[in-house]
Image 1 (spheres, rainbow, N blue to C red):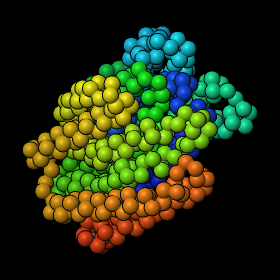
Image 2 (image 1 turned 180 degrees about the vertical axis):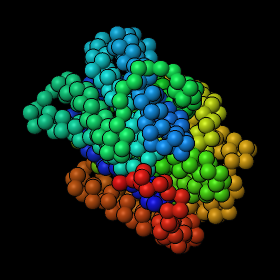
Image 3 (image 1 turned 90 degrees about the vertical axis):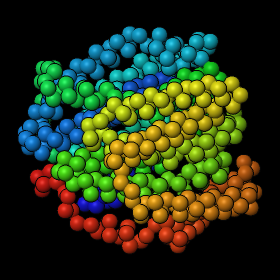
Image 4 (image 1 turned 135 degrees about the vertical axis):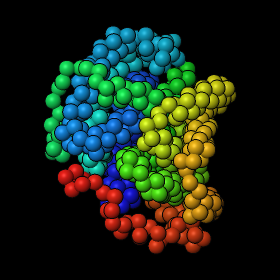
Length: 532
């Protein structure tokens, strides 16, 4: 299976999740707006979600996958099964202890870590504590699910792990639809969403558990024991967790700072949902697929294939994210208006603030995606510490810029800090890979990048002009269907311009893409562990 087809397999599941995520956020914006219940829910959900990214997805996609792949190569499926059971026993025990401790300390955590600004509003503070208490066990489900997703990705069975997150949005959309039908008040909706998150965690864990069994590995529980393999995993996982979850760390910091201003937390989350679409579909897909492929190439000593994987991944991410970033920068307000401006959201006139945040996030989008393409170059070589140091520097940049800009800029200052930190992190990762000789000069990539930038700039200029001409159909006074149709025409026209210019000036090559798609599976895994 070609690299592009593997990206597409993962991206298809992610795309379903993001599309339903839009539906969820549209319903939440209409039901809760950017009011106190929305602020409380987003802050409460951010806490277990951040832990999930830190100790689950980041750590296991970075540390577990190379070790699991090594076990398969050295000892076959049985050796990989034994290693997985050893990790499962330690992980489950640690998660259970962490969850109990966090549940008992939740009021202190919300007051001093998650949302210190809520302490001045007792009702919002108490609601945040209650919702976080309900949702925190979601961490156990999603951490175990992330481990099993790493196993599936190593076995080149990508779809089940990619499609499982869809069910979070399916369940929450169902909760919101039921609340709308029954006319529930905001407080009732907030509690229903919290229980829905916990239910979604159980469903997602069940899906990947079944998929792993179907792949031929039935995991049993072993008494927790620090075997040499588990010790090696923990040694790699701690820095990998910090590195893999850097975006979430910065988001959590931003949430804590933003909690000092009404509606800032929910405004940041609504904008975050929009830019997460290209980040999730492209960036996450590349990171998930590239790590096991790169690990396998390096383990077999195929350095040429490893270099090609890295260069083509960056080429692919920039080809899709540069125009997305340009579009978010130029037409953020029409996007926010079409997606959110109704119900409680419209009543609070939140569109300008959310649009400004989204435009700034757009400036950071290429950096956020490049980080996901660069870090596998370290993780596949079992170096998780260097990216951790860079992540720590980017966190310091994020905090400094956010604290400087927030008093005068408000919530958009938080987004500017995240974008600045993202670009700094991406630059440090790339510079180190080049300095160590782990990133070879690629003539095709160097030729295409400036041409993709030119194509994106031409597209952005055309979008800006067209949006001005279509202002009467995109404004708040126009009916929703008129706004949506006008935005769809703008997006379609922008795609035609971008792809036409990109292919016309050599930023992309149809023949190269066709060869990639048709590439045979010379480096595929053995038939026993082929994907579905």
